[in-house]
Image (cartoon, rainbow, N blue to C red):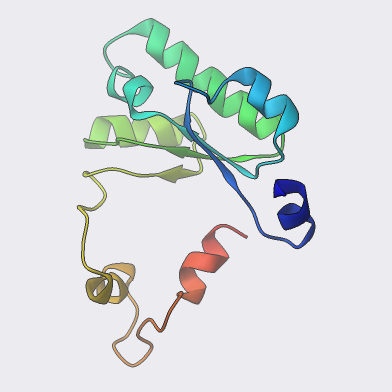
Length: 129
């Protein structure tokens, strides 16, 4: 099914990579366009060399497989800067934004009130295409 979606131009993501069922073998069999690095690796990024090496390796692996990378759990500016330096494509976490109601999303994204968001924003769709 994921292959059919990919052929239609609809991407999919491997979520929480590095934990549970999201393993290296999954990357051999699942046609995904995005790899989301689990927050448990990102949380230790600045404090342990091992976590830093693992996150950098996940980013390099995903890019070498033609995937975009999202780091989950970005909680501070130093982590954000390290992930940017490592070439991470997208960042997700409380340092960037707290969960918010859908009606506040347009303002957060910098859209003019007249543009609004009706269903799915073209800005969001364009970010992952």
